[in-house]
Length: 204
Image 1 (tube, one colour):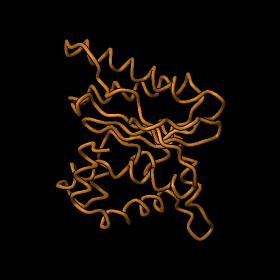
Image 2 (tube, rainbow, N blue to C red):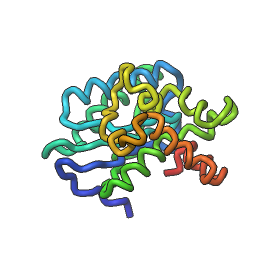
Image 3 (cartoon, rainbow, N blue to C red):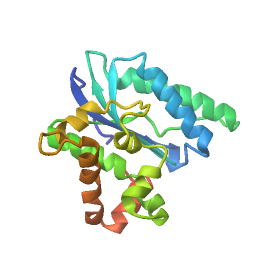
């Protein structure tokens, strides 16, 4: 029985994810990733949703969104993935579904869960970048994740950084980007290697 979609509500957070049809790759090169991100930025400007975090993997995507008003994220995701699917099918001369059915959504119903989901999303590329050096440094070099935006919030970014960083700000700990990165890094030794492989492979 397919998972039931949550009832969307204003000022609520949702973890949105989807993977390629039959777990096939949906990004084959840098131009594909860039195209998705450009479309993501375009449709963010047309819909009243806030992007909190994102990660694009070879065969799946993760988006952490806040619904700002009564318009659910459904229309936003539908337009985004329809536009990308048209691009992908035309470029690679293929037909049929690019994504595996309707996107999945989980309601993020607490501040603790919000922070956990953001960290989970940013840890997704760990298995495929771990050979490049220290884990956190490797994650920061991954170009298709919002983690680099959190590390350098003064540079251009498409994610709304203030919401997450607000949880890591205090008089005694004023460097909020560093504090958030430490929060992400602290989880790395805890995740079993087999679970890292599952996450990177899109076994959601």
